[in-house]
Length: 346
Image (cartoon, rainbow, N blue to C red; front, top):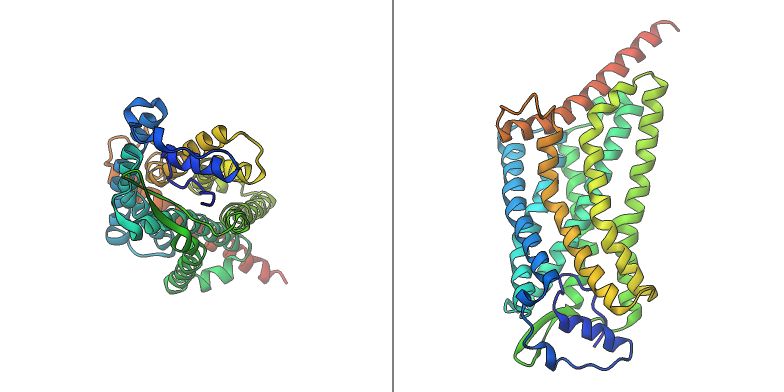
């Protein structure tokens, strides 16, 4: 058997499989009677998963309803609607993995074994790609306001989102290829059955580069350009409307950093097998938490929370998404008028 990447592989059998890949004895028989309730970490992860499922489905469902049906369709609502759809789909498949966490027995068949892993990485790639798109969109609006005002259309935004999803699906395909089930001692495990260590290493590195490192480098460059441009134009106060976008980016970074750190540590054998196994279990749960945090950010950062406390939650989310759109509109209109005044002096 080949090494698993531990994506939602919380069962002790998978960690024994990992040790077997490093030429250590494989003995699964003493794990058959393991029960989740006997492990503190397992119970904590169970509670975390349940919270993610409930808040993720409700929160993202509300955002989808507001951005998709209650608000006027704009470029901005197109970005955030797609982001909420990605998180909602992931949270909808999480109950299957939570059941697997508790029982250590995958009863949902080979297709769902592949599909749940595929959805996790689809969520990872689509989320970060959308954050890159939004960052580039903000950057272009600040640098080329006149061009952006004429070229930013809902149709073009929809095409860009579609391409981002296509790219995300393409990078998530390895889960459909290498994810597999195995029957042993009356239980079924869902794991990654790579044909070689080189394949495992290549896929892990590819996920890190395209799903984490490169996107954040692009985002950082965009934000540095935005900050420099606005400060040079003495518009530093205009950075305030970017707080939601900044919070979304930092939340994604902090949630996914532990997972990628331990994946790379697994490849380099920088820690013991037990530390890597525990780190990947915790890292995967933290990464999953990103899917329910976005709607919370919309609520608490869309406008001053204390001033808007009497408003409904739905109004907060609508205001949050709307504020981002209004901010971009201001950047498109203010500089264009400045450019017009400048042109009359020539």
